[in-house]
Length: 438
Ligand SMILES: Nc1nc2c(ncn2[C@@H]2O[C@H](COP(=O)(O)OP(=O)(O)OP(=O)(O)O)[C@@H](O)[C@H]2O)c(=O)[nH]1
Ligand SMILES: [Mg+2]
Image 1: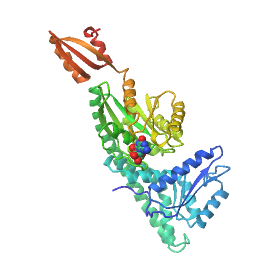
Image 2: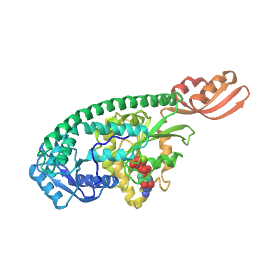
Image 3: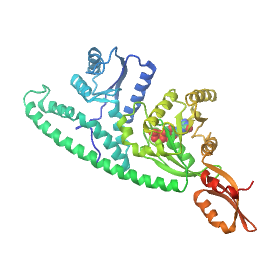
Image 4: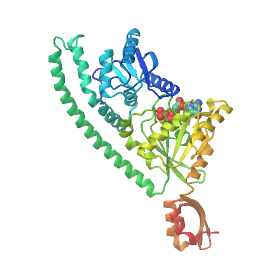
């Protein structure tokens, strides 16, 4: 059973979405974030009464914005008859409580919305555990708030009047029990995730022993990562026009144009202001990206914010310790733009990704796929060498090792020798220098 952040959950039908803009923030960025929040909220199936950016002149601890602005938002919520307030900012537990007190509505922040989407999408045991872990950590310091909310419901609209005190006492005891249960579950989940991680490590080591290189497909949510894996292999991963369709990694082996194998892994998508604890919780899944030989970042070229998406992904990769990995940047969905526009968008992206190999693609139309495969070969060129060796038949042991640790492209028998054309890891190739054909 999955963990619930809120005691009682009713699907809002008239949510008010507010992005609080701070001094120094860019209008365009704030508005793009709010548009993204609308998408996230719609993905949850909530109804939206209105979305609005509100600018505050100063940050204040109580509500994040000034008291005057907060009261303005509260009045707006009342006028709209909103049944929920969703703020496109990250609120501290204290701030969330203050907002709930002020508006008498359930108040969510961007983190809770993202956590809820992840919870809705989680299918496998590992994904459910990872989301649960993040949600429990989110809920723990907020539990006091939840119970106060419940007290108000029990004690009537007057808050502490009548049965309020008794109910609060009951609530407080319950909090202790809930906290203990939450702590115990957090520990249990951590342990279980650790064992999953070990298992994954063993599989990865086995691949490394075989010398098979690996790449991870990373990028902003909905960029087309799963579609790309499906196009390159027969993975059959769910690819859908919804945010965070993928929460699990799927790895598939494919053969590059030069014949060598590559293990390709699809990963969970990123988003701006991705809650840090989600990155933390998904670390074992995302380790696939950290340990890959190189990354393929997919960017939705047709999105006006493509560059920001690229930067956000790089920031999260940095946080994961994969900031320095070699990377191929793929500008996808070129089919949605006219050729001149997509060329322009690609040029802009290439400026942002100056250190990477960049290429334009449309997974839908199959454009750019051969170029990507060649770029993958290029990425691995430092690792391997394709060469022809003449091995005396008496040394057939070497040919067996070539089969095991590399990719044998052809073998021919000439007299007492075997002539082998093979792609071998560089260190191994160096040891066979004396058998190399000119
Ligand atoms: N027009 C167009 N649509 C594409 C292309 N590639 C993918 N899509 C669509 O974009 C949507 C998202 O694709 P996914 O492959 O699920 O994206 P993802 O990056 O895996 O998304 P998450 O798993 O949510 O992070 C789907 O509806 C795809 O059909 C493309 O080249 N052109
Ligand atoms: Mg996906």
